Length: 499
Image (cartoon, rainbow, N blue to C red; front, side, top):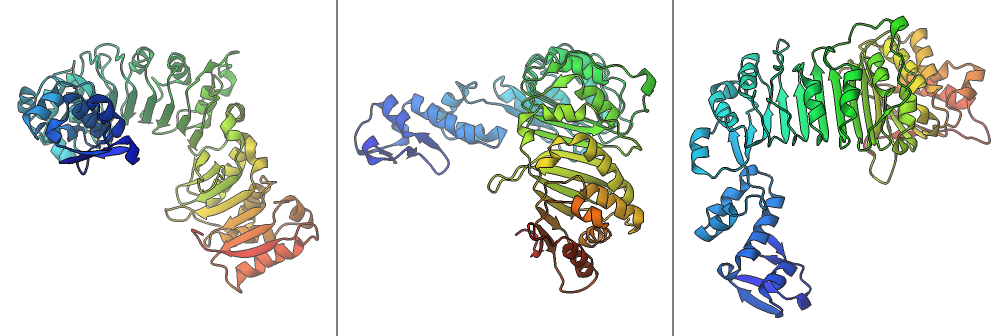
C-alpha cells in the first residue's frame, strides 16, 4: 500500500518506495484525486503516473544501468519503461568486461554508452567487447576509453573510421608517449551532435576539420598534446570562431615548442573573435603561444582562468593582461595564495564571499629552483595581473610535494622583496610554518625606505605555529618595530591552519 496525501495535508511529495518519489501535483492531476488522505496500491496507479515516477527516478540515477531495476519488477513496469526510451533517457552500457554481442542481441536498439576499464590489462583482454560495441556506430552516443596502450588505440581508431551521427561525448586518453596519431578519416564524417571532446596524449592531424563541423561543442579538453603542428594558435582561433556554445576550453602541451623568431612573429589581427559562452579557460604551455591565442579572442563571461607556463628565461606577455581585464568577473578579486613546492610556483587569486573561496585566476610556472621560481613569479605577476592592487589578503604556503631547494642568500631575499612589493593593498599576510622564516628574513633586510614601500597597507601578520622565541621572532620583530606608525599599527598573530 502507498499513502497518497491530499493538498490540504501540506505534503509536497508522495512516497512510493525508499528510492522513488514523485511530485504530489502529478498524482492529483492525472488521477483526479482531491481527497485529504487515502490508500492507493502501486498497481492501481495509471501508466502516466508510473512514467512520471520513473522519470524522476532516472533523473536522479547515478548509474547508466539504473533502469534495469525497474524493468525487472513486473511486466507492466517493463512495458512502460521500454515504451519510453527518450523520456527516460535509456542507454545500454557496454564495457570490456561485458559480453557485448549477447547483450545487444537481447535488448532493444537503444543508444550505446562505451566505457573502458581503467585497468589496461583488462582492457586488452576485453578489447573484442569494445570493438563489438563500436560496430553499431549509428547508435553510439558516448565513448570513454582511458589508459590506452598504442596497440589498442590503433585498433579502436581503425574501428572508428565510420560516421558516428549520435555521438555526443568522446574521450580518448593514452599514457604512451609513442601513441599513434588518429587517422584523418577518424569518425568518418562530421560529428554534428558532439558536445564534449577530450583527447589526452593523442595527436589528431584532422582536428581542425572535426572542430569546424562540431557546432554544438560545449567542452574541449586537449591535454598533453604531443606537438604543435596541428594546433597552432591560428588554427585554434579559426575553430573557436564557429563554436559559439563553447563553455570550457583546455589546452595543454607536453613540452615547450621551439622558440619563435621574434622578428618574424605574426602581427595580431585588428578584430578579435568573440567567445560569448566561454566561462573556463585552462592552459599549459609557453607564454608566446598563449599570447598569440588571447591576442585574437575576447571572452567577457570568463569566470575561471588557469595558466601553467613552462620554465623559460623570458616571459613574453603583453596581451594577456588586456584579455584578463576584459572579463568582468575577474575584476573583483581580493585574496592571493602563493604556493611553492619542488615542481612549480603558483599564485591563485580569488574573491572572498562568505565561506566560498574558489580560485578565479591561477598563474603558475614549472620550475624546481627556488630563486628561479620567485624571479619568474615576479616577472609574470608584474606583467599580467591587473587586479593586484585590489588584493587585501596574501597567503604564502608550501605545496603538497617536497619543498624547493632554498638558498637563503641575498639573491633570494631580493626576489622575495620584489614579489612582496607588488602587493600594495594587502592588509593581512598569512605565512605557513615552513616558509615564514624565508619571508621574515626578506622583511628584516628591508632598507629604511623599503620598509614603507613593501606591503604599505599591511596591518596584521599571521604566523603558523608561532614560537615565543628564535630566529623567526627576531626577524619579524625587527620588521614590526620598523613599521610601528601611529596611524597604521602592525600586529603579529598566531595562526593555525584551517582556522
